[in-house]
Image 1 (tube, rainbow, N blue to C red):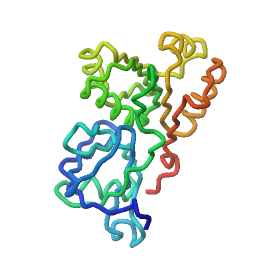
Image 2 (cartoon, rainbow, N blue to C red):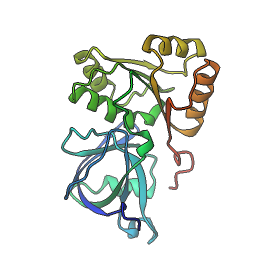
Image 3 (cartoon, one colour):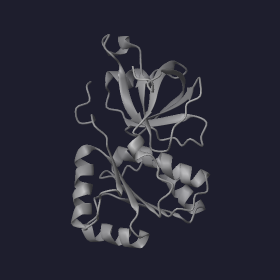
Image 4 (cartoon, one colour):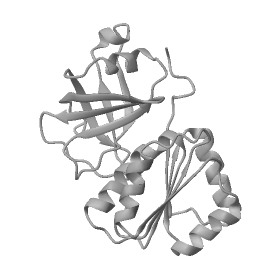
Length: 232
C-alpha cells in the first residue's frame, strides 16, 4: 500500500435508483479532501464478491463544497452494485482521491466540458464547484447521451440559470467538427474535458482533431472503463 493509499470508513447515507442509474451518498468518518474531477475506490467486504478483493473505481459527482461524497453509476446487476444497493446505513471503505490529471483547472481562460453518458459524474462535480465558489471562468457543457437520459439535467440547468458564465446544452449525438469548432471559437481556446465510455471518448477526440483543435496541453481525458464487460 502506497503512502497516499489509506483506507477510510464511510457510512452509506443514501442509495437511490433513477432509471438505469444508481446514486450513492457517503459520509467519510474522518477528513477526506479532494478536488473537483477526482475519483475514489469503494471497497466492500470480500464475501460480496466470492471472497475476492471487492472494489470499484468511481468518479466523484459531488463537489468539495458539499457535505457528502456522491457517486453515480450505471446499474447492470453486478454482484458489487447489488451489494452496494443494499448497504444504506452500512459502512464501506474508500481510498483516494485519484484521477488527479482530471481535476478542475481554475487558472485557465475558459472551460469546455464534453461528457458522454455516465461521463457527466466528474463534470457535475466541477460545475457545482464553479457555481458554489462563484468562479467567473466561462464554462460550457456539451452533454451527449444517445438515449436522451441526461443524469443531473435539472440540477445543471438550475446552476446555469443562476450563473451567467455557465452554459449547458444537451444533445443525443456527437457534434460535427464545425459545431465543435464554433464552440471553441466562442470560448477562445478553452481547456477541454472529455469523459465517458472509451468508444465514445475516442469518437469525441477524433472529432476534435477533425475540427483542427490542438489537444496537447489543453485536454484532460477520462475514459470510464469496465461497463462493456462488467461481471454479473
